Length: 137
Image (cartoon, rainbow, N blue to C red):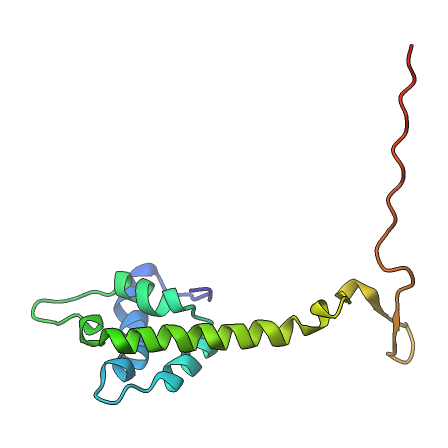
């Protein structure tokens, strides 16, 4: 998980983790799994697949007589969630990296001080200087 909170670790385990489990694991454990809703929520909170399936499981606090909600998720639902999560991540990374794949970098463009127009930086990357030869003594 990659967010900041003002709560202590105990408060996170007692209040935040159960709320996230209910919102993320509940739809997966139901009779009709709602994988798109879980993907949307995990994306909104910046959670990885491991955060949803592994970290929440490790951080949960199970009281006496309480069942583990992760045991209620069928293996085929877990597999489908993983496939769809990876497909979503691939689409996002391809969309964000399309400019880099075309050969341009963020350093290639500079804003002019007036007008806000962008111009390409001439030459692209810096040229390396040739190595100096050592003198024999």
